[in-house]
Image (cartoon, rainbow, N blue to C red; front, side, top):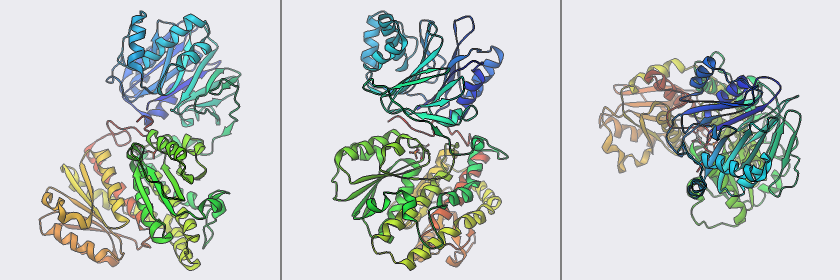
Length: 610
Ligand code: G6P
C-alpha cells in the first residue's frame, strides 16, 4: 500500500507534496516523509513517525524547500513504523526514492548488495531498491538507465519515484502492479499513486500502464512501455469536482460520505434508467452482446465490495434466474476452479486497485472466462482498464477508510446490471417497471433514514461499553448484517459478528446474554415472521435487541427491545436503504468511543498488496 507523490516545477514544491500526502493518507498513515532538491544542489530529507500532520509540523520548523521532490505516506509491510523505516530511502546522499508495493526477492538482493558493500539502515524492502539503482547508476551514469536496469531485477509489485541530485531536472518513475498517475501541469509536472492527490494543482492526467517507465521533466513527459518502446498514454481530464476531497461542514469524512448517499445513488442511476426501464446501452455499448447467453455469474471482490456481491447474488438468482457464485478474491485466486460454460466474471472494487481482485481478474482472463465486467468507482484505475465492460459507480472520491457511499452505489449499479441481465432471461416489462419505480424512490428513502440520525445516535450509547455484538439478517439482508458488523468492528473496535438469523440456534445463541447486543435488520419481506421467531430466541436468553424494522413488520418495542422504524421499502431495494442506519450506528459508537473514525488503526483504504 502506501501513497507516493512527486513534483518537478519552477516553484517550491513542499506545499504541493504535503497536500498530496494528506490526500493519500487513506493509503496508509503510520509514518511519512519527503525529500527535496535544495537550491544548493543537496537533497534534504524529512521523515516522521505518525500521520502526515507530524511531518507537516516538522517541516514547519525546518522547511524542506526545493523545486524537485518526492514524498510518501506509509502502511508498514517490511519493518515496524519508525523514522528509519519511513520513506524516502536514500543510497548515499545524492539518490532518493519512494516506493509503493512489495519486493518479493528483496532478501536475496539485500544479501548481494551487502556483499557488494552497501550498508542498510532500515528493515524495508525499499532500501534494497535504492541501493540497486545506485549500483546501476555507477555502471550506467544515467538515472533513467539505472532505474530500467534495476527494475529488471525486481520481482513483486511496485510504483517507484526516483530523484538524483546530479540530475536536477527530472524524476524517473515506473509502475508494475501498483498504481501511478502523471499529473500534467504548465511548466511543471507531477506524479502520484492517485489523481486525488494532485487535484489542487491539475485536472489533467496520464495513467501509466503495467511495466511503464517515465521521465518526468518540467516541460515534458516521456513514457516507455515494458518492451522499451515509446508509449503515448493520452491525457484524461478528471471527472469529479475538485472539492470532493474536503470535509466541508462535517466532523468526519465518513459522516459526510454517509450524507452524500442520496445524491450519489441518484448520480449512479442517472442516464441509465428511464421511468420504467434500464437503458442497457448506457451500461456500455457492448452490454447487450455480453449479457446474452450468460449462464452463470462469478463475482469476485474484497471487504465491503464482497458484501455488495453477496447482496447481488440474491438479486441475480431471484430476478434473472441465473446461478451466481461469490467469492473473496484472496481465496479465489489460490484455488482451482471449475469454469462453467458462459460464465460472466464480475469484479467489484471501489478503488479498482485492490491487489487480490486484480490478480483474480488476470487469472480469470487467462483461464478463459467469457468476459469481465467491472463495477468500480475510480475512472482510469487498473480494474477499469483491464475489464471488457465497466459500470462506474458515481460515488465521487471516498476518503473515509470505512466504505459507505461506495457500497450503496455499488448496490445501485449491481441492481441495474441485474435488471439488464434479467431482461435477457425472462423478466417481464411489468416486473422491471415495478423495480425501476422502487429504484427511483431510493434517494428520498435514504434521506428519510438520515433524518433518524439523532435517534440512532441515542441507540449507540448502549454499545459504548460492550466488547461483542451480533448482527442478524435473513435472505439479502444477511449480507447487509455482515456489512453492518464490518463497519462496527472497523471503526469502533468492538467485536461484531453477523449471522443468518436462522443459524442462531446452531451456535451463537450460546453467547447471548445482556452483555451481547443483537442488531437486526427487518424489512417487511416474506422472511419477517421467521425473523421475529429468531428475535424471541434472543429475548428469551436476556439478550438486548436493536431492531431496524418496517412498521408493517410489527416488531414491538418493549423491555430489552429497541425498535427504530424505517420507511416502507420494496423488498428488492431494502438492502440499500437498511444499510444506512447501520452505518450511522457504527459511526456514532465510534465517535462516542473517541476512536479515529476516518483512519481506523491498522487499516488502509486501498489494499494494493497481497
Ligand atoms: C480495504 C478497505 C475496505 C474495502 C476493501 C476492498 O480493506 O478498507 O473498505 O472494502 O479494501 O477495496 P476495493 O477498493 O477493492 O473495494
